[in-house]
Structures are given as structure tokens and as C-alpha cells.
Image 1 (tube, rainbow, N blue to C red):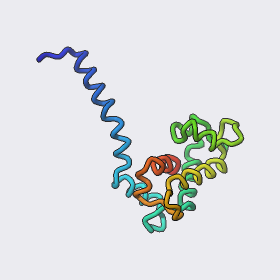
Image 2 (cartoon, helix red, strand yellow):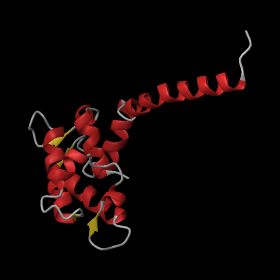
Image 3 (cartoon, rainbow, N blue to C red):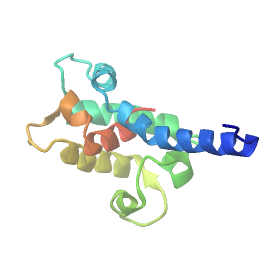
Image 4 (spheres, rainbow, N blue to C red):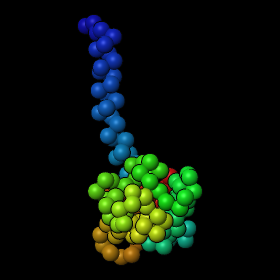
Length: 140
């Protein structure tokens, strides 16, 4: 069976497109969650509490604030916050998020990722969609 170059390129593109969504799942693997947990858990108790999450978020905020104006805009945040969540994260609707607003939103995301309300997020919770959303706010 002969394939034209166009057919081969098309099939390759479709294969990549089908595989790409799985890459998101890979980031939720136990190994990734454990790795994320290691970097976010300075006391090594196997969980991330709100203070640890906010410390990581504060450090990330400073790294993302490329123009050093004390706020993050959509360009600086890239895809870390959905359009729907932007409304929550930017309560004054000024199209930027201050560090205080960012940390307040991290608290919202933390609560979403902590459905058992035990005050900590473990590796299992970090693998959930809410946990992955929290990780986007804490890690580069």
C-alpha cells in the first residue's frame, strides 16, 4: 500500500494530536505528584498545607511578574487561570492580579483541591483536576 507524503504528514499530525491530550494525564501520574509534593513540602510530612502553598505561590508570582509592577496580567499568567476563574481572581476587574489577589485565589484553588477539608493536599488530591489547577498556581 502506497501513501502520499500528504497522507503521511496528515496521519502523523493526527497521531500527535491524539497523543497530546494524554500528556496532560502524564503530569497527573503518581511520579509527577510525588515530585511536585517533594518540591512543595518543605517539612516533608507528605502533604502541602495552605501556608506551604501560599509560600510557593508567592515565589512563583515574583518569577512571573516580569515587568516588576507588582501585578500579573493575562500574558504573564499564560494559561494558569481559566477565563471563568479570572473573574474570581480579579475581583476589582482591573485586568491585573495583585499578589494579594493571587494569594487569595490560591486559597480558593487550595480548598477546591482539598475535598476532605483536612487542611492539607496530598499526592492523590494533586492528581485530580482541581489539584492540577492548584499546581499551575504554585509551580513554574
